[in-house]
Length: 104
Image (tube, rainbow, N blue to C red):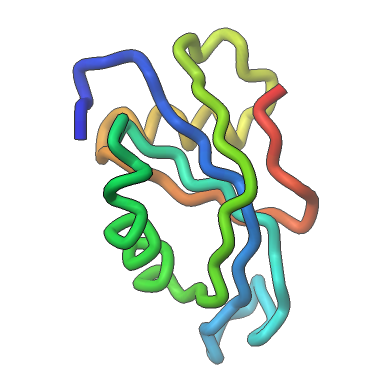
């Protein structure tokens, strides 16, 4: 993963909650997810990224769209901005929402 680049890739899709003891999300419900990663080879490393999402308590993961973000100033959503920063620091970050996650 390249943390020196300003580029973050946002993989948007859906996943089901597989956590049985979570107060925020009900077990078995499907939610919109956004996986932000600095990995420009995300297509080749999709299995690794899917494992990252599964380890956070999600399954039935499906990614539908990828957006490339090179400038944090183009983001208007506070959740995406904080997730962008977290992805830059740690290489990837997961956002879960009840509405589809889009960058623009």
